[in-house]
Length: 401
Image (cartoon, rainbow, N blue to C red; front, side, top):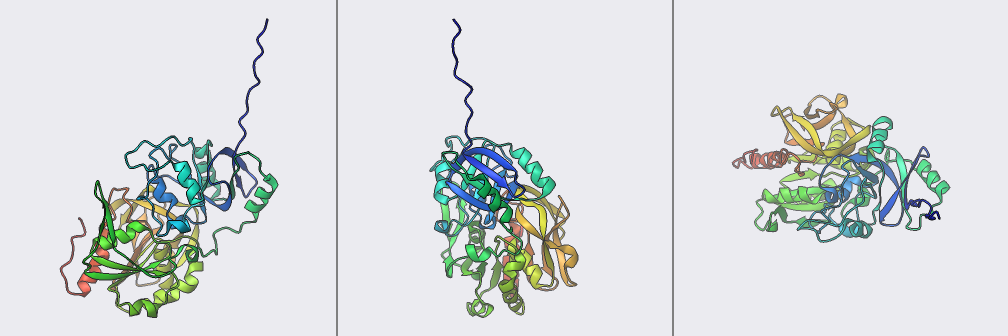
């Protein structure tokens, strides 16, 4: 007698990524339930997923990880980058290829799934991330809705409508959404293996950091070089900043369209540039410095997101492996006379650094506080501090540690 067998079981998708063109990608949901509308980018880093997801520069974005195994080392309270975890500034969604396994690392304090829930990040796994990456490379970064429903019930028509209706990042000022609510002093220094973070208790200089979405490790490296760092909100005026009597001014990274944030930030930067106080900018801060100096910025096709980007420093002739996270770029051809291009991407030739000729003012597009090289770009912080020390007639630090 023939044995009856159960029919093939079809797994019901519990998460969707719905692109603005109507494409629907099905997966398995994890992290927060609900939905979020944002721009989809891909990140090629092999490590550092917790730092990536908490980087305020990713506000308004869904991060697709090209590395297939994400979450296996778990999460902890030390590897976050946003200043106020309660505000949950950073990526709103995440896309993984493989399902997240239980953590296996001595520093793990929790499972990625639970951490994503606490952060309010909607995520899905089980899709062909290589195919999605290829789509982004061909068509650019799409607007989309990412949705997670444990029961697998979705209003697909509404998700498609929301994805198609979202206006995207162009013209969107997100710095105001992720900046600090008030001024504060930062003293924490870099993490040391088996010791944790240190504290700067005897600062020798004062840096005011304008927070457009600053990352913690930037502030740690400044503090580690002897700085008392005063972090101020993005809309702080030049007069208030100068009243703090800074030795140096830092323009931080952040999300969104630099031209939108520049509506209020550029006039402040221009007034600060009327002084001889050294200025250093990173990422969004780099783009807004360029705008303040008369340059222009433009939206990129697929952006630069990853920890394996080669950048050449024309001031040294060296090539660095750096961390990148930006969807807008400075137009090098728009830079006026007196503004020098100092760094360039060897992937596509886009601008990655500028300096104001004869003035203690410079900036870079990449993230020198990150360590993919492993510390190829840390010299930029010493370069900044040296501008301050030179102005005060003090002995300069060696740029190479």
